[in-house]
Length: 322
Image 1 (cartoon, rainbow, N blue to C red):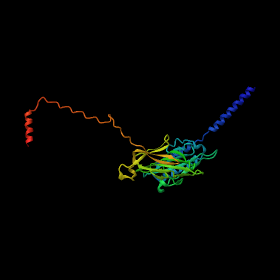
Image 2: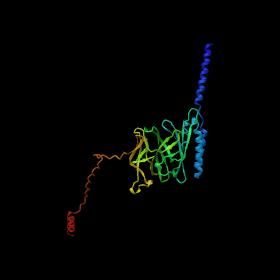
Image 3: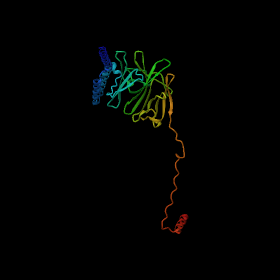
Image 4: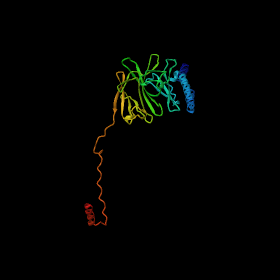
């Protein structure tokens, strides 16, 4: 009898454990949300009216803002939304999602949201980022906010903590397709205040001997620029850009990567410019690399019929006399 009671007790405990485990693992289904967003992107592709397309993008923002506020959405991959970029800060302090719109005139518009994880049973915090690229004067020197943003697609987040103020700055690498003539790449500096309000740009960068709030590189739309973070050397590495001819300086549609490469290294709380970390290698002159001397020409085969030597000599004498 005792064995039966013990067996029933163990079975009941097992069922309760399975039920509790299934409750913890129960996930929210976001498939309908993803389908709605994909349908909106399909409508955007079909329309040729840019103003109508922007309204559809705002609808996508609204859906994402509501969806990403759900606690389970913070770690949801949203894999079916390939048209939206999705990256986390290295320790998942925040998540950044952004995408672009290709206008009829060949220019690009950008959209972004930043998501902070909520506390226990609290919604996530979602911050919309509004692009105002065209209205920003001297963008390399401006401190910007969530409602004044240089639009691009971010692909890397690099956290760096300053020893001076103990504040963490997130360095973002981004690409702007810009227009039919040029592309741009950014090294952006992102930080947050105590309330999680984002600030773009910071006076902690030096480029070519000048202080910058962010680095902006513009170059020909026909080329690609290398701009990546080297985790082993802990530095941002980038192609050195230049036009093919001196009189084209300042005409960025002609700028292209050279054989040289520079870097930005974080030293004493600032990004410092390091020139020529990569230079063209001079070829060593060796016996193998030297050109081979030409082979001596073979003497012409003599014909069986020879010309009279006397006649040739007489002709030579006549030519000398002339």
